[in-house]
Length: 295
Image (tube, rainbow, N blue to C red; front, side, top):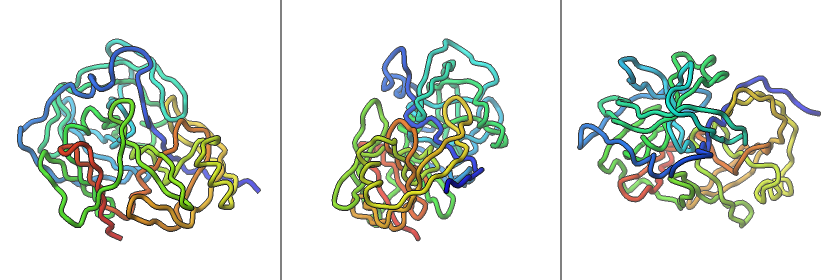
């Protein structure tokens, strides 16, 4: 019997990418950080399980969502500014957005200057999020080290090392710019997934992927219908959902992990996958990801 969930979840702009134009890596490299040596620690707000940070932009503070899956940052504007282009996201939909160089985006005591972003009216996302400003994407993320303590709701940002020996690294590869991928192990087989901290899912899989087929063969799934925000607005989607008894990420083993199978662009793990951890994005040392279990 199908079930209905009215909860709103986000796939956001996971793997948001420019469909026409120049190199993503070149755009991500634009800009700088002030001060030269920097550190700040700030609280974050839970937004449907995602990390929401206060960002000072254009003289006011607005709430931005932290999204490793977004190849570019996104500024919420009622109308597009600058040259427009077509962009694709996790749902395979497309949207016309403007582009700009943002003079300053300040988080705590750290200012990200002259970084690249796209802009537009993200209808369906700004309404449920008070004072919504947009998405923090790779043009900002890759310029610092980030220590996200999910259980204690804090984020540390620095150009210095923030980890100690209690953190354990896991395998990460990068394709198509700076988007991070890793590998999950289930029943002795490894499956490639994007690390998409702009997704509320624990594990979300495309219907015809190898990983989804293995899940179907190993666990019982139920039908679910829900609303999802992704590129282009709200969608009502039908999916299969279930619980994987055990999944491995590097040396870590997680039990009773929720999986959803629906129409999405790539296999991904979202922010809730790391809900019991502090996750450290070590961009100073080649973009290594490190974890420490807290719960």
